[in-house]
Image (cartoon, rainbow, N blue to C red; front, side, top):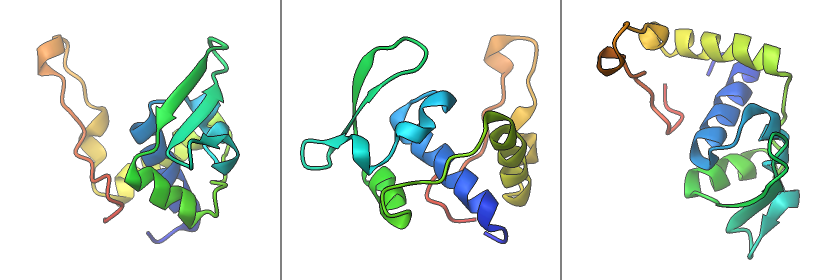
Length: 116
């Protein structure tokens, strides 16, 4: 990845994909919220104030290890701006095109292994 800030955003996006958390809960995906010998996250969500337990996927574990358990989070606005740039760099610019009918929606081509 040519730009470190885009690599961080890509990693946050992939981490969120493997956990299913909303953007406002990205900051809780760190080693402080790991339980059960580091195999699960235990967080309280911002939107619903519900406590959830999420299994830690091996790829999510690699991302956590890459950042010493503390991925650097950024504002929602910057994340939205930079994730578009990540897809441009990845040559996946057609990811946001949508058709009127639900069954015609295009799905984004995405390599979640972090290889560009």
